[in-house]
Length: 214
Length: 175
Image (cartoon, rainbow over the protein chains, first blue to last red):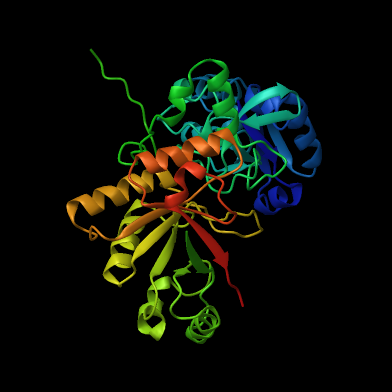
């Protein structure tokens, strides 16, 4: 899940200066789960912007998917034609998809933080940095690229204090956890397997995956 | 057992000279990268004279290209060796993006390869700051030693008896 946080309303108001005809777009997937862009937050935003002319409000299933965005936007085609600007309660990918699909200016009402593991509502944890070079099969399903603040692929670093992390002293060093877990599983040999540095020649931004037609 | 007298921050050349005078010029000194001056500035002072001179190469602010040039520059500048460390990383407002393109193990492999290809001389010593205090730390130190490290550096006395002859103690000096 993409974890998002709301921008402060004053920032959004500033961006809406001299713009009156507005459509508010929410996301009924990730942003809804984060309670930043679901239908309740869309309604809340409409109430905050009651002094503007809200032409429509809409929650799109996956606004980051141009196909669903385009499909759902068709339902408000007339309003869209008159809209000066969209206010998007979506992740950054959603904002850009909406801009491409509608051709309208889109104001990002959320900050996009990370790809999160959900423990329960309100508890989101970053566990994957989508580095494109997954080493979880050798690290007992604990990602050091994400869980080590230094992203060290062959740890621990010299900052380890006992078993604790240098940067977050209240947390156990992920490389200590990996070591313990591998030992318990009888896979201690994996601990010292050397992991090469990431090849940025194949993973620099922006990344794309395009299927080849057969 | 060797002791490296560590100056973590180089801020002015006057400081370097003065600290070195306190330490004693014949002692072995490790110059760090936490100050405003890069360790290469030591070459322009008398501080290169005397005992062995080492440079600490930290990884928090370098990608692999800069790590490579730092290792080669250290050797070319007359340092006897380099101490590789991930580098202290504390969170603070407005801080720069930490780099950590390479970790210490990857940097060791790079340094050994540079030595093998002759980009740094065969007698240029390569050491690593050792993690201590856990089984995982001990395993990592074993990895360093099995993969060509000339020495490991610690700030406490002898956490690795089996590597005693390859352990260097670091004593820190600050202004």
